[in-house]
Length: 198
Image 1 (cartoon, rainbow, N blue to C red):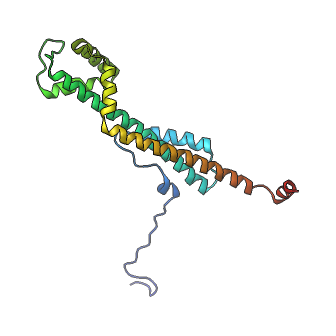
Image 2 (image 1 turned 180 degrees about the vertical axis):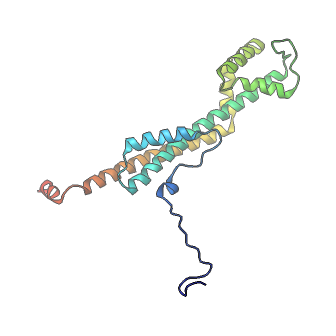
Image 3 (image 1 turned 90 degrees about the horizontal axis):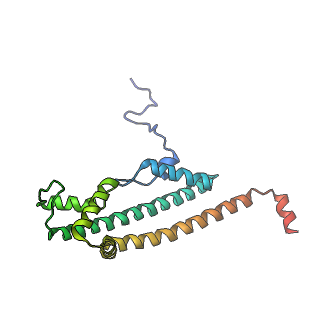
């Protein structure tokens, strides 16, 4: 039997949340490294050395803006690479393509795979695809890459976002430095402030 003072069915929330849970890192996208984010965030935090909660919040703004900048640079590069691979695949469609063993590449899937080899993260695969491209087409890859860069619609979007993020980052850094300077002035004993005025 329950005591008179107890309430039936009442739950007590014993979960406590820390500030870090609310102001931590942004959601990472596929292909982004939590280790890289943590290393970058740690380096920035050590450099800025936040001393109180407001400085910590402002520091996290700087960290998250810097991560967004890196994200959009990476995504812009991937956009250009995808557009370049698409252009290479279109060039391959009109060419009699054969793998080194002599068998013909006939399926669209194989042509796309070969084209994406030119933008592979694997240096050996990339080098082999570039050599194959040079041998089969004789075109200057840089001209095609420049055209791909100019034609990729998402590049313009990422460039605009990067410009905005860079301005925000510079402002966040200025705000942080002003906050640190104001906090430092608050730490000066009143006697020293009076002496400076006279």
